[in-house]
Image (cartoon, rainbow, N blue to C red):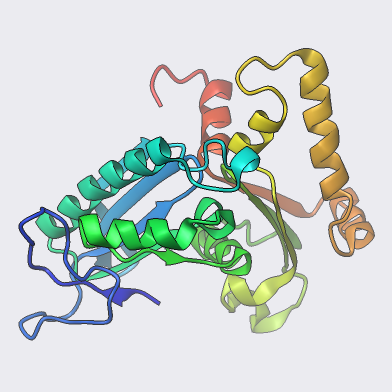
Length: 270
């Protein structure tokens, strides 16, 4: 559920009250909505205007902040990483205020979930930017991924394997579409048969296996580690049979997936 946001701008340029259940007495129906995702690697913001059959994007922001840098070794968010994230969030707050956002959901994921000082960082963000981040659970993160990709699901498939590769965690969701009748018209989140959140992402995995300088041997070790994790997926044998039947739609989301698509398509700019 989105939370209402104050449209006034405090002296520090942030969006005061964003994330709190408050509505301006002058505010009518929401005309600007926003979603912010602070991950282990990236900070993203999308501002949109609702339309009858979707929405129109009016502003967007993305910056690599590597909030989870080094967390696998220390268990804490580093000072430099937190400062990078706060600076990016300050820009997001200014955009929320400038665009007159009336409803927003601002979430933080694996880095803040797993860090010993994650809650302290969220408090610092509020003090310095006025933004109130919501640290979501792994299940909520998986369900949000499903909701965000629902319109891309192939309606003729019997199932969907959705994978969201993050910086510190990766979610894998199996959507069962085999029920007939009006079942396919139900929200996609109600079609989740199994899901799992793996404690591995592009930042955490690379740091465990040598960082930027990855040799072929290290790469094979990375593949083996992820394969071992995937082997524990619930009811994997049933899923294997569905995939073998050829009626399963693979659907990937995240910067990793879109970057690979850009490379595959040889895009000059991404």
